[in-house]
Image 1 (cartoon, rainbow, N blue to C red):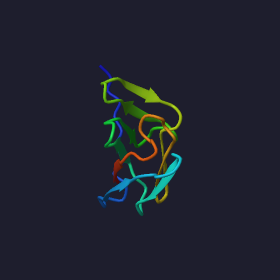
Image 2: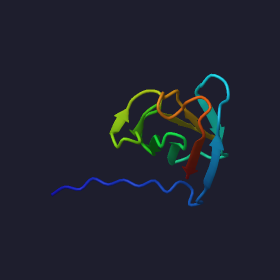
Image 3: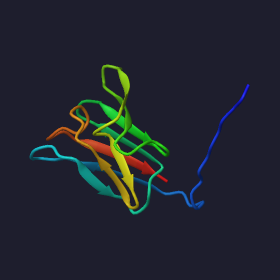
Length: 108
């Protein structure tokens, strides 16, 4: 049996950032500057329970999304995009909703 495995330990310094976000107007894609390039991001809509995750190696705008009802899907747009200092949360209509509390965690 063949096993394919990869690992990226970055520079050996572990970083973690957590926070919250709420948009009182019209929901839009939003950027979080956490000061590092995350290798893992989880965004949870605390109000609805819907969430999405992005792992190192995934394409920009993609995510694994789970709605509170239990359905888990791989999305290819309006997900999470990582950049040099943080990440962008796309305008996913289940997770990124106006006037609903968003909680996030980013790990390097």
